[in-house]
Image 1 (cartoon, helix red, strand yellow):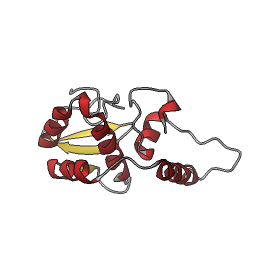
Image 2 (cartoon, one colour; image 1 turned 90 degrees about the vertical axis):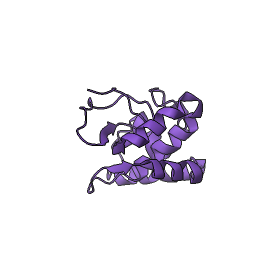
Image 3 (cartoon, one colour; image 1 turned 135 degrees about the horizontal axis):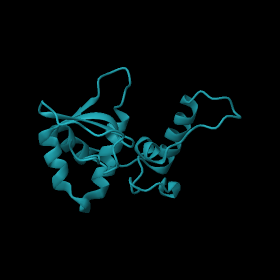
Image 4 (cartoon, helix red, strand yellow; image 1 turned 135 degrees about the vertical axis):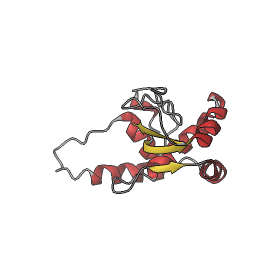
Length: 141
């Protein structure tokens, strides 16, 4: 088994990841969602270290936005990472609020029902720069 943390955001993985037999690693992260990453992309992520935490948050959000349960998991490559790091930023507070309203609306609950909101998943959906290993939702701004 490989490491039990996400190579992008460092969240604890939902399930242990078996050693791959291909040049890709399958990841099921509570923040980023399910995705595959090439070994070359994983190497690029390792080089980021902790001093570029914003890149990790931007990357996590970009992966989560590409999640579609009807399609195979998104493949993270080095060229895609370079594009994300060069062209994308974390959303503004207004964009985060809009995404949160979309998230609540998509839950399709009646007004009196609670919508389960898991902090790590929300961090990826909303695009926050909070500590992905924290369970404290005060960082969701």
